[in-house]
Image 1 (cartoon, rainbow, N blue to C red):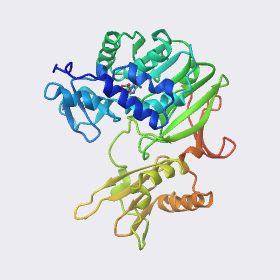
Image 2: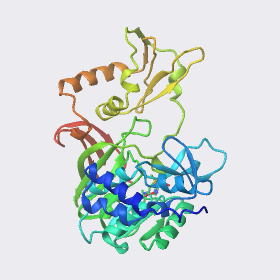
Image 3: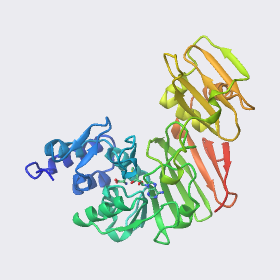
Image 4: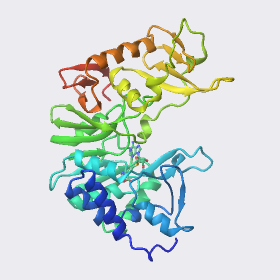
Length: 382
Ligand SMILES: C[S@@+](CC[C@H](N)C(=O)[O-])C[C@H]1O[C@@H](n2cnc3c(N)ncnc32)[C@H](O)[C@@H]1O
């Protein structure tokens, strides 16, 4: 371990908290970032958002300074296995994102909170600082991460209950007032509804499916009726819950011969290359996934679309070719959806929301209130 003691972290933490305040973080949350030293929860090696490797031993000053920047720091890749592609599998989330989620949770004094995805333990420490350790339970599916986080928490003086296990299953304690998930789900686990007593709140990154573009921050209220309902609070990209990760690889039919072919004047890939537009499309249009693929000899990759409920697929090429096949003409469907969105005055993410209905085993995405359902997914109760 390098020598970081020559540098004082306190001014760095104060400056980070100041930047959070400037961006609208409420004072009771901003001050947690002064009191809880983020660097104490980071391993000696982590990766910044631009994938720079930061090693405490080589450069302790950079390691410490970077810890107090507002960026997500990857702390584990490839589930901790050597020789992988370097896919981030755990991180200390960006402080502004953590602050946003803590604010969205509307935590009140003496409430009990369950965090799904302990990661480094830093967020659990913030919660423990806010509520007292006895009111905080955090669950982490990766044993090594959980043990490291528990040790860091204890060293820093926090003693929340750190549970090793799958946060989608019913964890301890039997009931809490708030659930904050720090991994993305598309199927909200029914067990989370069981965990909340009476009026509770779930704050979680949510995305329609693992192949969908991006995700949103969902803040859902429960009233003890088997229903969780609430709006989306902006876009949010988080790593997936381990159980709901994308199976991987392009959809199987994308090499096949299409039944419908047309050529349009402009590059038709636009909506899928634009992060904001493709996210909106994923909220408006159900059951599809997409990706990019480079064909041999092509200058630019094409976008492929695939239905997640039937075998329909499409390829959208930079030169204007649109190829579609199956009972859903996915590009056509997207065009119609897009026109409808324009007609509705181009609603942003914050006008959409989600209802989880346990009794009828379904989740519904809506626009401008639960009475205006856009689409519903039926699910088994397990
Ligand atoms: C973005 S990191 C969490 C950041 C963390 N809250 C912090 O403060 O450092 C996401 C974490 O969720 C964990 N995770 C993924 N799926 C999980 C599941 N089903 N149950 C519990 N933990 C899970 C991952 O192993 C990873 O450590």
